[in-house]
Length: 451
Image (cartoon, rainbow, N blue to C red; front, side, top):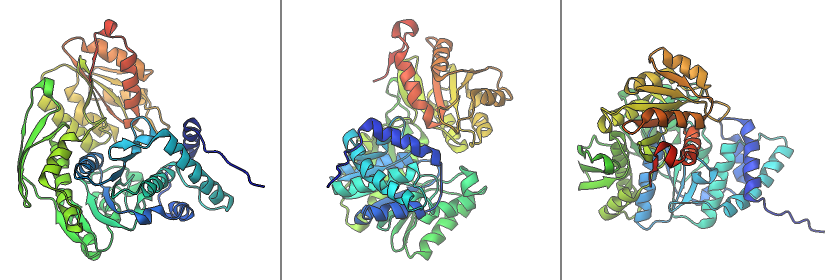
């Protein structure tokens, strides 16, 4: 007698993933190794560009994946966290995994997880399950290359189970996740550099001297080709505000001279991320991936970003940004000074309790006329009232909102016709902010949604 077990539907798949959240974060490779073993180790059939670091990972991944796609390579990408849906984390050629495929692959993985638990072995976490799902999906779809973003760390991150790493990219490293990775840049760098594999290529972004040396030594110990991204000269042509998203960068690379490249991502730091992706594209040529200058230009221009100084409404201008740590907050402040140096701005801020939110506030609060605090809708979220208390220590106009929707209504009222709104902090607040802005009627607040 055969028992047919039907696949979960998409709703059931999401409910299952919600259940897995209770297992939290468990660094280490034991659970993911067992899970992938039971799935036939799909990751071993794939070739990877592995990206670690603190800031710029997601943007570098987006640029590089777009370049590879423009060059005609079937490109898988895995990044975290998502803005709205888990399926956003897993893409092929810029298209997220379908709901049907997500549920079907998760059904297969759940069977393996249930067997693991029945054998009294470590329970895979939500992130480990998603990582395994991505490997299985990319394997079945026969992608040419996978651009893979490490989660929290590197050495003991679930993504580090992979073997076939062509290129490791270490983005700028700063203090973050100290409770897991250490309290110094050097300790954190040692974790991040753990993604480096023997006989591969390593691309290192601009770092402090001590961090750079740790990454270089790890690369040399693994007999890798080590390339430190040059401090390429470039200029940014400041666009008019209606075309705020268009930046032109000119740079001279050691490989070739490329001028007037266009990216649709705002800020000096995004130019640096684009340069890192260009360097990565050239280095992939060493392992027989054909990527020409026209592919790079087209890939940079067509790369699409969400949650990175993204305009979600135009009148008044309303931006969302995932600046969730001190360094990202400083970069956000730089961008604000370039594009809106004189406009009256209202900030909506929501952060996680384990972040150094006082430093985030210190880096940005002087640019706001009013700060509204919100509670991120996840267990690690810092309450709006606790954040407001911290903000009142350095700013006179602070309001703690009871909900994200209330914060959006207050911010739009405060901004009026001549002000602007910037919501930032945890990526977990962005989806709810977007939904709230759409719900608020255009007649009541004269909001024009951005296309």
